[in-house]
Structures are given as structure tokens and as C-alpha cells.
Amino acid sequence: MDAILSSPYLRAWQTAQILAELDSWPAPKAFPVLEPTLPPERAVQALEAYSGAGSVAVVGHRPGLHELAAYLLTGESDGLKVGIEKGGAVCVGFDGPVKLGVGELRWLLTPEFLRTVAVS
Image 1 (cartoon, helix red, strand yellow):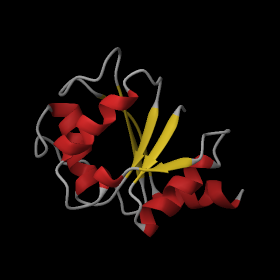
Image 2 (cartoon, helix red, strand yellow; image 1 turned 90 degrees about the vertical axis):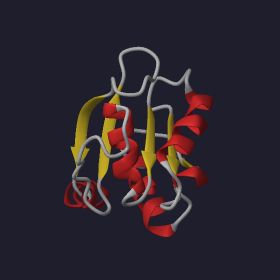
Image 3 (cartoon, helix red, strand yellow; image 1 turned 90 degrees about the horizontal axis):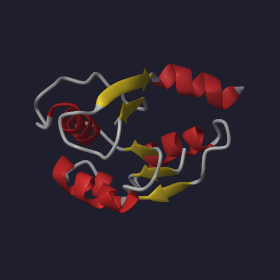
Image 4 (cartoon, one colour; image 1 turned 30 degrees about the horizontal axis):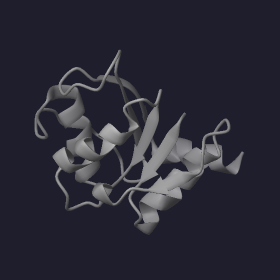
């Protein structure tokens, strides 16, 4: 993992800190465009600064994170219902540069799994 970007709001920040404890992931960075009221297009534009990174974790809120995942997977923020639980995480991967609608769902972590990892 090259970067963990998180909404600065407490709940998302706590999830980002749990992810940072996994297998030497980096410390999270505040990423205000992940605040829940902002459209996914803003997050995608801001993510362009990380285009050279191998992998970036993004931690946000409902419904914004759902919309961002759908936007990356389908090209439309309402193009897919992604069931990310509150406190959960999703991984959308790309073979090559980020292009809307060609993302691949790689994994979806439940809050229960993340709590188990945080305790161990």
C-alpha cells in the first residue's frame, strides 16, 4: 500500500488508522474531498495526484464512498449498489491507469473483520 487517504471525520479516521496497522501500511493522510457531502467526481480529480502510486486506500463515509466505488466501477455514481457497511472498506483495482468504468472490485471488508484485525 502506497497511501491511505481518509476523510478527516472521526469515524473514517479511526478506520484508516486500523488499516494502517495492517502489514506495514503507511499512516493515513487527511483527504477532505472524501467528506460525505462532496460528489465522487471531486475525489477522482484529487486522486489524480496519486496516479503514480501502486495502490491507494480511500476511507470515507456513506453515501459518498458507495458513490465513489460505483463511479470507479461503472462510470456512474448511481451505476451500481455497493454494499459497504458503516466502518467497512472496499478495494477497487485497475490494470493500468485509473479510468472510470473499468475498475475491478478486488475485496470488500466488513467492520467485524476490521475489528478482529485491530484486536490481534
